[in-house]
Image (tube, rainbow, N blue to C red; front, side, top):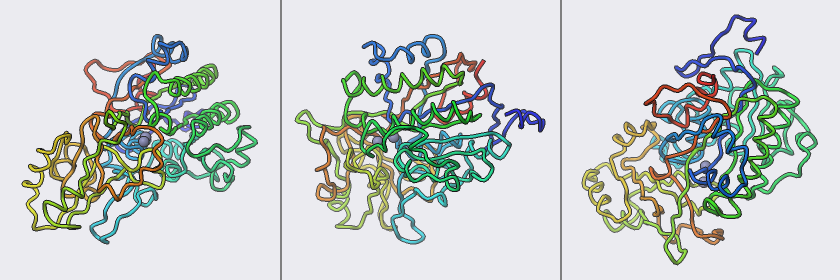
Length: 418
Ligand code: ZN
Ligand code: ZN
């Protein structure tokens, strides 16, 4: 940061927003799936004294995430400071009308905006990024130049494969001193924090982004032993980051709700089945953007779907039919959804559907492998998972009446800390 100040820089601009230089090493954290209540219950049960101190002496606010309330769109919003209409990542995959194919969106070529980390790096700052799952690594680290010696970025999942050339660091396993975690585990997120604490101590990045995984939140609700253990683990690492003098802002990519019936079976509206009966078999293409190679803990069932229908179909009529389906919270034409939720129009279908708090959306029963679900379904994607915490260890100056988004996290950490 001294280098930046020496260059006479006072601010760094990125995607039309302006960020002050960090007053101290600044750590922005995305606590994946942190529905409001997890942290509060851990505190009430005496498991999270650091969170309690931050919330009492620093700041405890709520923010809205972007819709769809999924991991990738929100992580990219947080790290670019803008909604998906700007950065282009509206889910894990989309239907590309131009090529007529369903495409995974985890390649940086789909990213339409630079990250705040890149902007700071290019201005002379030292930056670091650690994400739990490797699927996000290339997107979150896009544009970083490791040859500068001022950038480090890797995933916990593939920590053993990190190299100086591709990640700005090698021997991450020796550096962190923990075994390589399983991809479906709490240890994957713990590795992120353990790495963050080490990086802060030994590399002293000016700006660091840490992003966990919601494996635990998909399994267990606030106040459960599993959840309290998880937040107690995080709490310990927050204390270490805080003790090193870091400015910390923690938010979440989305919340999490039960999406099951009383008997524990997933409570699902199967959209492809509905459209097959309404307009004919296989004529509508239902896209569930939560779908990705890691579906074990949610069976690709979330609360957001987008549907492509043949051009001659009456979209308004289909939207009206959807609205009459119990458990549909919102159905609207794609263009309206793009305007309301600031989504990229070329990556959204003709219709957008969101389900209510305890309902999930699927394609057809035979197309979902639910054998990996070892707990009653909990998931996200809808408006009912839009509320997330925004917590800091520092007091903040935020104008009254400002409604915060989770993608204001870097703005808050850099511009609003007293
Ligand atoms: Zn997530
Ligand atoms: Zn999830």
